[in-house]
Image (cartoon, rainbow, N blue to C red):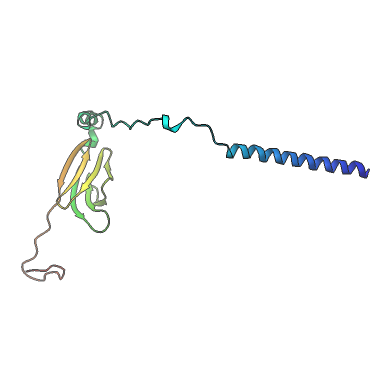
Amino acid sequence: MDGWRWDRNRMLTVLAATLLLAVAGYWGMALFMVPAHPAAAAVQVAAPAGPTFDGAASAPLVRLLSPGAVQTDVTVLGVMAGRQAPLALLSVDGAPAQAYAPGQRLGPSTVLAAISANAVELQQAGQARSLPVPGLPPLPTDGIVPAAVERH
């Protein structure tokens, strides 16, 4: 009986070792074999073509498909600049004022394109629109003048 047991254990060990070698061989071949590629020198990559449509020509179509979006009412209350990106304080369609950065959407087809000291540029339904920034209130001529303002 001991001889039979020794043969069974030996057979199971040989079978397990064979299975382990087969699995290791398969994954070794699958992971380390380089797939055959055609010669890289023969392949020429064409430059991607630019858009084939004209933005000005598509503006009437955009207006036709989104008539409500063209009517977005934007009021400029002020602009802020600093170390970070500039911000514009805007009221959109009569809503309370919020700060917006360039690139943010104000409506379905309205995007804040740029902010400068004098104007806020919008893209509404494919058309550029410039809104002036309101001027600062005049400094008081009498009374207390804020310390941050130097008068010469």
